[in-house]
Image (tube, rainbow, N blue to C red; front, side, top):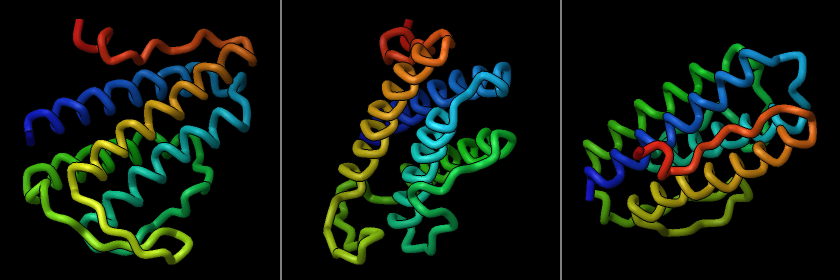
Length: 147
């Protein structure tokens, strides 16, 4: 199962890096919404990593980051997740609190799967936003990554 999650996060990093190339090539064409959505993807990933590791988060879920900071945040998230996959029993159930203070229990593997699904959902929103502002949407489909 660990190899499956490593592959998912390799793909997630690949997709984020493809987005980042558009962000760096067209900073003047980006909308506030496109920046906010990608910041949110990275913030949520960061928050889940910190919950798994029982650490305090550095970002709020809707914090907006400077374009120059996005690649580093993505790289740190990716490396931390690979370390989580390596170090944790993916079947253990963790107790955590949401940003609203509500307690839940989820397995590490469910949390990891959620991170990738959440990222895909918002990357699709970014693709739609790119179309609306005249940018070519980035194809981040998993099958294209595998080809």
